[in-house]
Length: 167
Image (tube, rainbow, N blue to C red; front, side, top):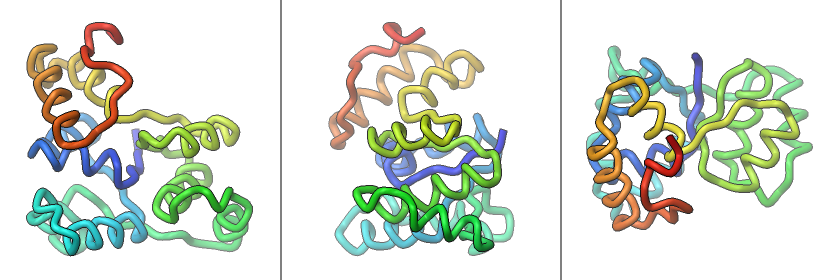
């Protein structure tokens, strides 16, 4: 499944040093150039967990698995102009790309998820990714719950404290 992620999902996994979970689950994940700009802003603001992210990003690294992508064509630009101005630019561009290319959209943002539902875009977020990783036997429930606790300590506002509730 092709997937494009916004900054919050990337941040949650980067903050606990486990971007590999995304790679193992999806193979390649796309990020918009606007999400990349948000990541760069985060680095400038002291988010040290982004320090090595360039080693994952294609084309910055030829074998990177996070692929930069951008809006293409008039239809994508038109949809961007129609979306709520309450969406951050990274969320909005990812949502437009997901809509027009039939990709899943990885986000934790409530407004972005609501908008995605209206546009019939498949979504998942941090909790969904963790539960998918458990179901795929990539990590155990205990390991996933430990990651969730670390993410919460790092600032993730999770509606659940135990992934067993979602399995």
